[in-house]
Image (cartoon, rainbow, N blue to C red):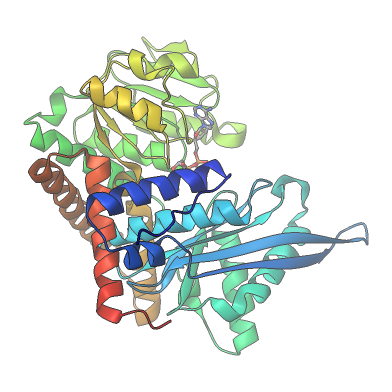
Length: 425
Ligand code: NAD
């Protein structure tokens, strides 16, 4: 008997279910395992009453979804955004399951958040909301059950509030209950640059497979925030010429190469840290759309989801697309890129340096002993190389695209854990 397949009116969740079913069926996974893996283990919704500065009380809605703990405690970020809902959390939680599985770290996947526009809150309101959310999800999070991290609109400060709230409720220190804490306070040296370092490591490994000397390669990096800046910086230090960068204020192109350190230093002098007004000899300012269509060997989107679409996929002039952001390429664009012979390194491989950095922070917190930045980066680099090679070889041996190969490798590890443990709870 064939079991029914779940669908969703939420496009992100529907896409992630479709991707999962397609890969699971291709690998011949048993129906009982497919059914277990297609449903989150636990989803909760909590009400978060906050006393506002004007004396009124506002109740926000918060969520936490644990998709899988088959391979270890679940891991995933907490975002503050008006669009956060249970379906979005479920989709993102399942992506975390595949990302952690592929990375070979001992975690399952989770995601959570609060439906709120954080810019409308004062600092006091933000702290009260974060702490109440932490208290409401306290029964289901823990070092060995579910470990949150920052995501959209949350950072080190929110992680410290969560850690402090849980520590006080439990009457003991709980530093390993969240990752993404400041490196001066139970965080990890190297975590800030970890995702960009991971993306650049994938790019350099890819060039090796193509027998391309990095010094003869050119790249355009879209997004000049956390992921984009460090990705561009590490690529440049390996010899790659960065001919284009881009942020919300537009695209910046220079055929002779952009000085990334100088551009990074410039953004620190500008409100909201943008590239607005950046200049150097030979630099041309263009639109955010145009920069993606300039000639380069590697295009690396590190900004938003859905930027490579059926509208611009025909116009890209790159040989390789390496996804630093989550979900930058639509399924329609993927088909076009494949037909045009543009090789895509998928997001949940390329940007897994972030969760690997989080894993290293957790390891250090549990041990109460801290690594140097050099040790953090060396280990991250080795693991990223190993993971890239794992997917590359699978893709080569089974003649499938890297995105499908990454999915198949990731699902296999979770399926094996489920089979080993059986179906009790
Ligand atoms: P960030 O906020 O630090 O930077 C985002 C950058 O994108 C900024 O430079 C911004 O100006 C630019 N941007 C925004 N809208 C744009 C547009 N329309 N066109 C061009 N540029 C635009 O964010 P981040 O932490 O660097 O994350 C970037 C992406 O990487 C997101 O998809 C995120 O989910 C993903 N990611 C981040 C991490 C991490 O550790 N930070 C880990 C894994 C995945």
